[in-house]
Image 1 (cartoon, helix red, strand yellow):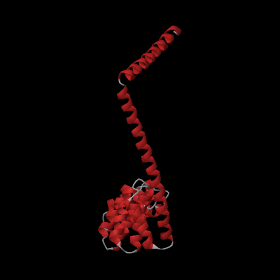
Image 2 (cartoon, rainbow, N blue to C red; image 1 turned 90 degrees about the vertical axis):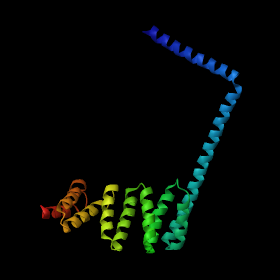
Image 3 (tube, rainbow, N blue to C red; image 1 turned 90 degrees about the horizontal axis):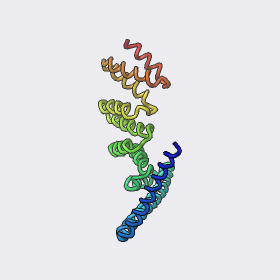
Image 4 (cartoon, rainbow, N blue to C red; image 1 turned 180 degrees about the vertical axis):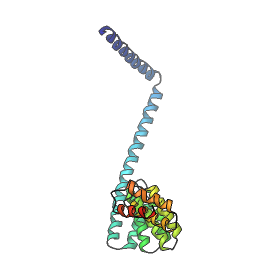
Length: 220
């Protein structure tokens, strides 16, 4: 057994040594190719370093701009806040600040009662943000805008979109209850049951659990 292991190591060493000699012979026979190859690697390495440095610089700039924008937002200097947040939406797409800027712009335009613009920015925020709460809040804000415009159908369609896209949104149990009540009121009892059961089965921690149970008992 020891002899077999020894032979195995010898074979590996022979292959390794042979590979070294082959590589050495290739370098002697093709010096220009090797230099080109090394130069190519060097260029790639330089590009990678430049890209990393640009990314770092962009991140720093984005954080600075976001800080300024948020300061204006907190100080109720809304026009200045919009101006700064829009700088982030136009650039810095690789940063979280870029994504968050859409959310804040949605809030700012909602505050200004420019509802179409608010919807536009909230939709973009919902498509970019990874946080369930921010994504859900963006979609819920759009629903509320539809309701404020008197568009009940779009409002409930948007609520159903939220529970499908963001089931972990903290407001989802309340939305499910509201949808159940909506369908119950309109005589679609089976659909209402489904929403109430969803609250009971999946969100037994929520504050609307017992209300959902009572509503379900009313139907059954």
